Image (tube, rainbow, N blue to C red):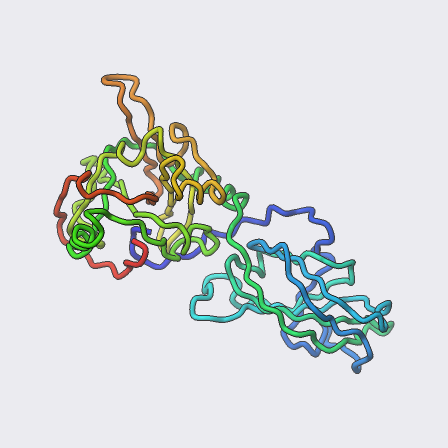
Length: 363
């Protein structure tokens, strides 16, 4: 992200996994109070001998679902009518603060053959650590429940968005992308110390760094993809990049065709919003066959470089037949280039001073 501020998620896309076998459907699952000693109507009878779940196993983890199974002693197994699943977010300083903060996490499921799938974008967040424990229960004729002791507590972490989820974000971003404007350069602003370090320590090159965790919480590029951030927004009335930048007064400016050409693959990386009216799209440019290209092929939707709603590279049908470039006007676009870049490729500008941004990791 090249614009300072605090991000929050676009509304998470619904799970694409509808129809999985042995799911906990909305008819089969209920939310109860967090207190493990009471059922939804507050009536649990005295403890009876029911088997305690053992050796809990979590598998097939996605961003909003998982499969769970366990072993049980045969004792009173036939009397089990329900399972109580206590699912809790494992709190830490990096936990997602914008989603599902106060949702109850006691799930009541009818006893079905194991393994069963627990799924719900309304109580599971992507890339989040959870703890889970299980009770077996037997519903009595008077409506009370007999329950077992709680099982051991198991920890697991949900996954990143899949390409199916990312395609849903892509479709939302396309709706608001707006008309396309022509541009000719990419640029990157940083402070003098950044470029001095690149010259003196990194062999006159800018080197890729790991992308920070800004953007959608489930984005598979956050904290994993290495690259160099560039911008290409310009002042519409002047068709030139902005004069100032919060990231530094020294500007590396490079011709668009040096980064974006027919030997480059283009990927959709993320779509998210800030606490403003602005929406952001992150794209990835990766030279074909590069390490970054292989990373993106396995995780991100690929875009046609000559026909998409965000960033295009086409042969100029007029004039010299060179390449022409366009970007979407109505979203703030940022690109990650996945390979090192020689500083000798650039022309250098010194922009006007702007407000200082304190977001520097992964930039």
